[in-house]
Length: 389
Image: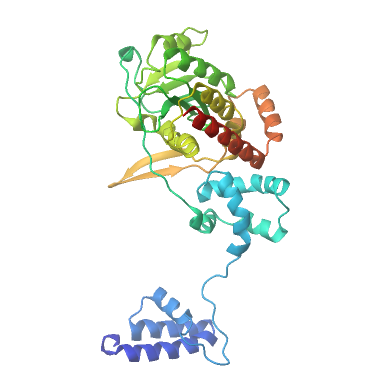
């Protein structure tokens, strides 16, 4: 029947059904929906939406029908508090923002101002999707690029890493990132990036160059900063890693460290550290050129202090739990967002002494104070870099 009705007739029928639907009881509403499906050709869900919709012009003396579920938050109220948290946390996705909210709100009140209890309740109750929608206007994007050259020394004697099967912390992926400003000439600073695959604990160190001596010195310093024992290290095929100095350092100890490498030109073999080359290096230091020795020491003071503490103690991350093929699609399943600090505390392999020291340090830290210190040191580094240039 609905195929023979003109658009104007359908509109009139819908207006009449909508008026009756607004005041009808449950049983009569079901009958009106049946009529809308039969007369207008709607799917039942479409009929529900059409009959609930507001008329184009309000009828005098009749209450307007509010569509959908009422909002339990006001963006204009929440965004002024979300904005500094989101930017200080380096613009996380909604799920990671949701995970950090419980710990960051008390820090916000200590560092900024008190939050109205209703607003605090809304922020803690807001879902990850809601938080994503609230911060959507603030999002920014940047291009990416990199520069790594494969090495050949000792390559055949170092096994190629397959998939990670080891459990517990202490298994690191490692890479270097060129802070070259577009001129890859090895007369610039490199950033050494290492991430633990089970806890996402990340350490950054600046290299004056990629010499074997300089790289080994910073790996030694990096290992001493880990809250757990180093059990294995996986790198790419660059000469800064594939050399006798590092092989001897990792192998000639009472309990040798397993040293493996990825396949040449296969970045996805070191996917975790490649991801952090962007989120932990490029987003903080960009693509500018750092080529003064003093800048390297300032970068190490920042990365080994305020920046490293902010990244590991207060910024949640996702870890991949499962990856499978579903027809032509690759389905990835991630675990809940959690800080590397919390994962280390939950790891049975980490000693009680290391956990006590980590808790004591965490109790002294405030993410907003750390973020201000990071920005202060970045400005100092940039001024030194510009003077050197």
